[in-house]
Amino acid sequence: MKIDNYNTQEIEELSLAARDYATAHGLLFVDGAQEKGDTNQATQVPLTLFPSSIPREAFIQVVSVQKAYNKLYAKIANDLEFLKTHLEPITKYDKFMEKLWDLHTKHSDFNEKIKPELRQRLALGIFRSDYLVNKDDQEVTSKQVEFNTISVSFGGLSKMMANLHFYCSSSGLYKKPMELDYLTVNTSITGICSGISSAYNAYCEQAKGIPSKNLHAAEGSEPIVLFVVKDSERNICDQRLLEYELVGRFRIKSRRVAIRQLNQLVRDNESNKLYYNHPNGTFEVAIVYYRSGYALDDYPSNNEWDIRLEIENSLAIKCPTIATHLAGSKKIQQVLAESNALERFVQGEEQKAIELTFADMYPLNDTARGQEGIKLALENSEDFVMKPQREGGGNNTYGKDIPDLLNSLPKEEWDSYILMRYIKSLPSQNYILKGRVAEKYDVVDEIGILGTIVWNTETAEELNNGNAGYICRTKPVSSHEGGVATGYASLSSIDLID
Ligand code: ADP
Ligand code: MG
Image 1 (cartoon, rainbow, N blue to C red):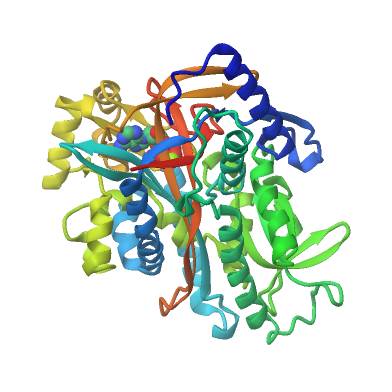
Image 2 (cartoon, rainbow, N blue to C red):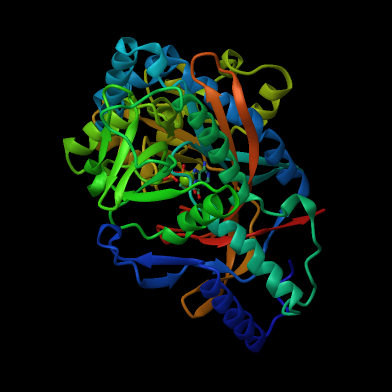
C-alpha cells in the first residue's frame, strides 16, 4: 500500500483510530502475574498503521505448502531414530536440549511398560512456519526462517489485526481502500480452535471407555483444554481469544494454569487420566496446550520437569508432545535442508515445494558440510546468522559478530549451533505505532503460516490436517530480530500485490 502521501494530521487521525480499535478488540499485552489473578495493566501491542504488501505468488507459495509441512513434522516426531541421531549428540553442550532429551527418554520407557489401551497415541500440532520474501534475479520466493512446534503465538491477535486494517480502510481513512481478497481473510482463530476441537473429540471418544474409580471429575462435568502459561504471562489476550472461540463456537471449556501452579495436576495411575485440581472442583484434562515451556526459565526447578513428565505420560493429548517439541529444533531444520534428507519423510511434489522454501543452512562440525559452514562463518560472516537451539527471540548472532562468538566458545560446542544464510527480504515502508506515536520506517515483513494437525504417533494416520490462517510481523530494517512480544517488531496484516 502506498503510504508516502499522508500528512501529519492524517497519520494522527489513523493512529487514534487504530489505538481505539486495538483497545476495543484486545490488541493488548497485559502486565501482571497470572498466578495472582492480577492482570489489569494493559499496553497496546505495537502495530502497523497500514497492511504489509506481499507479492501474491509468494503468499500462495507458503499457504499451499503448509499441509505438507504439517505432515512432515508429524512424521519427524514419529521417527525416534532420526531424532536420536541428530539431537542426542548436542545434548552434551546444551542444558535445555539435555533436559528435553532426558524427558523424552523417560517418557519412552514409561510408554513401553504401560497397558497399551492407556497409552495416548494421538498428538495435536499447532504449527507456524515463518518466512521472509526473498527476491533473487527477478524471482520472488518465500524462504523459511524457522518452523515452530511449541507455543505458537499471535494466531488470536492476528485476526484482530487484519480486522483493524479493514476497519481503517472501510471507514475511509486510507486514500485507496483495500480490496477484499479471499486469500487473506484470516481464519487463524477458528482454524486453531478447529484443530483443538478435532483432538478434543478424539480424546473424549477414547476416554469414555476407560473408567477412573479412584479419582474423577464432578458428575456430568466435561473434560477441559488446559492452557499452560508463563507465571507472568503478558500475551493473555492472544490466548483468551482462542479460549472464547473454543467455548463460544465449539462448546469446549478451558482453564489456564501458570507454571508455578502445575502441582495442581495429578495423573491417576489406574486410568492414566490427567486431572486438574482447582479449588472449585476437579477437572479431567483432555488436551494440554503449552503456551510456555519452550525456554529453560520456564522450569525454575526439577519439580516443573517432573510434572511435565507426568503430563507427557498421561492419557491427555499434548500440544505438543515432547517428540514434536524436539522436532521443532533448529538443528532438525538444518538437517532437513541437506540434500536428500527430506526423502525419508516426503516425496514428489510435496518434497519439491518444501525444498523451495529452504535457505542455505550448515552445521558447524567436522563433517564435510560442517567444515564448509565453519569456513563461511569465519570468512563470510556478514551473509549469515548463527542460531542456538532456543526459541522466543533475542538468541541469535548476526554477521560480523559471528567470528567473535565462535572464538569465545570451545570448538566442541560449535555443533550445538547452526549457521543460516541471512535472507535478504524485500524492503517496504510502513508506520509503526508504539504507544501513542506512529513513526515511519523502512521495514521488512515476516509472514507466519499457521496449520494444525492431529495424527497417530504409531501409525502416522492423520485425523485432521489443515491451514489455520496467518500472522504478519513487521520490523524496521535496522533490527535483525523479529519478535513482537520481545519488542523488536510490530503486528501487521497482509495486502496482496499482483
Ligand atoms: P526464535 O526462535 O528466537 O524466534 P528465529 O529463527 O525465528 O528465532 O529468529 C528470530 C528473528 O531473527 C526472526 O524473526 C527474523 O526476523 C530474524 N532471522 C532469523 N533467521 C534469519 C535469516 N536467515 N535471515 C534473516 N533474518 C533472520
Ligand atoms: Mg521465530
